[in-house]
Length: 135
Length: 438
Image (cartoon, rainbow over all chains, first blue to last red; front, top):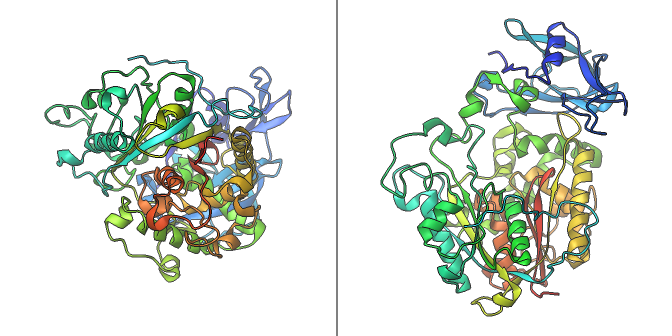
């Protein structure tokens, strides 16, 4: 069963456009030099909206921790259960993190601390999402 | 009735000092409805509205207050089983009943206006809308009474549950992820306190040592305390106690989170009566004074809160509460933190350093004697895990312990102060009660 399909909005559209082009871009505040994800209207550190720019980042990270969803509430994901839900930290800034189902890694077999790299997965025609796999 | 829209009642900043109304506000009464697993959709005497009316009547009776004396009503009007796919979202709107049940109000939704009408309250001057959950409502009531917005205030927290699986449906049944959910649900996180805490909890076990199932003694003790709580779901439904083996063999929800780590959704309502300390002295019960209330609302840095953030947030919450109450960790006798999922309670315990528990100590503390008869009667209420998802056991137990009316749960150690909360690490509130006003 495919994953739920993200619906881009005004703030997130550049992000999803980049994902659809198989690129990982994050907002960076030129005042703070801080990356932020998910995208927001303003910098979460200094509140600036004028100096937020989109910056492509290396899709390199590490597995911080995980759980295995055995009895979730999302109808669309029920057939996938059990499946991994992993917290991935970005190497470029470990305070930035992402969720992942860690494709290619069986449930319960998640290597905590392992390096991962970004990949892209189609969830609907023309719509990709960012995923991560163990390197 | 007046509904001030810009009333600044929160104490949600650092450095506010001792609360200006410390000891001048009191809880004079409380009332619980029966706690059912679900509303059956047909029994009009068991609707959330009927139960809220009953809870209010009990609270007024407990305090010895008549409806004409009540001049404030604070009622949480959110649907606990929604909006993230609550049962009502699947089957409302639908054919309704005769008044007062001719809309969803009274069945699965309650608000102050509906309650005021049903209870025949004629002298209401404070009945805000958009009221937050119970963790903040008690603070709102304390501040409102202290500020003179009202003098005798009913605080009502309804918790609904209907037929069907909890929070299945609505946006959880959607194929699309909109708004903030675009960053979470494609990968399976549909939101909630379980997701907030499971990752930091795993990091906690990794950082400090220990295993998820070390929570078993805490969960089992919550069930035990629940069975000592006459009004709670477990006690009124003869729920069998669980053993360590029961716990360890129970099914997983978000592995390692087990079913017994989660509270049981119920259909019930609770009411409290807040008033001025001066008025409370002439009411039916011994007053339970409010020494402080505080709130917090923290924004996570990224998609998922991590252990560092959770520890920082709970440390700040503890600092704010202690500062406003003029107390420290050694001054707190009764400690009733929130336990809707067992995996978060250690964060509160360690932040507030109750009985000297520091970061990384909680699992070892759970393995000790935390029974109400013992030296460390942690979470004497039994919380949500022991009583069902009423989210009020923490407050009621604190009041009863200070009154000395907790029955079989009455702690053997001193009970002069009590700290209670319904809160998540990122948001919610705390309240400090005391037997004496200063």
